[in-house]
Image (cartoon, rainbow, N blue to C red; front, side):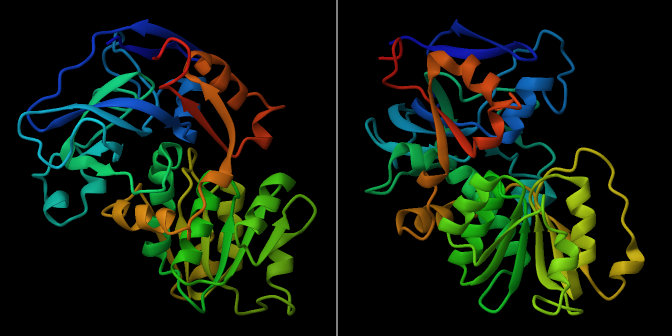
Length: 356
């Protein structure tokens, strides 16, 4: 049994290095990695380095946290999994002792050990890895391990939709038709919403949003979305009940302010990397601005939604790369000529040359 992992030696450059197969602790599983999703945070980390740089300049940086595969071995105290089981993991391991964890809000635990970030920067782009059994889930019958790897980003959308209160009768607009926007779309639909509009500037993403169930799609490049959504033929003076900002665009965040209804809600799902000015005078009619961070107790519901066919993650995969081509995969993800048409990229590890 051999192991290797992709290391980010500097921005925009991976090296695949041999490394020992880790030994699972008493409450861990040893996972043979099959698929790893390429998250936007991984792509950002590849291009610029980690969001939060390590204190130690010699820290080994791994990327990837959307992962599924097969159990290769289990620790002495693990009873719910056995070798050969297909599983997916929840990549954040909270400390379990802080006030947030005790309240059940473990996603905002300040000491969470989240893969591909501080403090350990361990990534899933490897052949074998260990993970606590407590944060591991069985892959249901009929769900592929590629789909299972995408439970993680789907859970981001599910958490946002639940936190936002998406339901039947809600008028919803999603700003940004990338992976998280489309995951949020499907989460809203799975919760009963039927009136969901998606805004983006890339036609292929808008076409996919329509196929996935959006009632309407709008190309923001050729349409003044504020004027259109505030027109009498749409939502008029009332505005939009629930707005999800999923792009991380400061411009769209400001447009969310202009289209939300009195008493409505804006869900900030995308990561705003720069300060965004807010004209509070426009929303001083009891508008709620709510941030959404990862997920919390959302994996079981998300797994069921995908397994039941209510949530189609497979159609979102536009690019599949072999593990040995991880450098090309991430290079294409930041290439202006290629990245526009990439909705979701995944890296196939097990079964690729050199990973038998």
